[in-house]
Length: 248
Image (cartoon, rainbow, N blue to C red; front, top):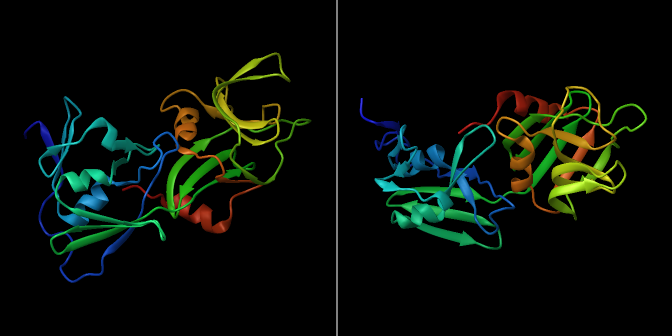
């Protein structure tokens, strides 16, 4: 086998005449104005071969090497690519600012990519945070909420307005709170060195810094104003969706 592992064949995966696919895209606060779409899912619909070099970790689409600025990852490692990469390949990308939908066309193949709203749900019972964009689950991570006497408040909040790569708590001896996202007064979602799977904080929502660094990924993804629901448990619909996942 060559160094390149074939991820998506260039053969006709989508039957001709089938209704165009509608895909939920992904955006990142750290990359404003750029809409990403799942690489394999979108390339499959458009009939582009995707290759990955296991040694150099270079990703190619249709024989063109993707630039670092054109590719990102969801928290689970799923690769997403900026829509402009398909323009570079010769596909036509039409973006409707009214609906915030983009139509990507290659010959007789077409795919529509939505720019859906971000939303976040926290289950205090399960000590878990889930992040969504439209119907796409982009992140799931363990958290640690406020312990007895410092319970994390339940309710409907918005991310921000304050965000900081490194915040220091004025209430608790300038304790460092990396990758901080305010959701309610002195309550933040932030990274911490200790995230047991039970309530342990002074009211904030702790996220892991190790491994894929959930706190950093969340900070780079979530934009100010994103809906944050803190509940006793997830809704039935989101529980089912979370169990099935949304890898692409």
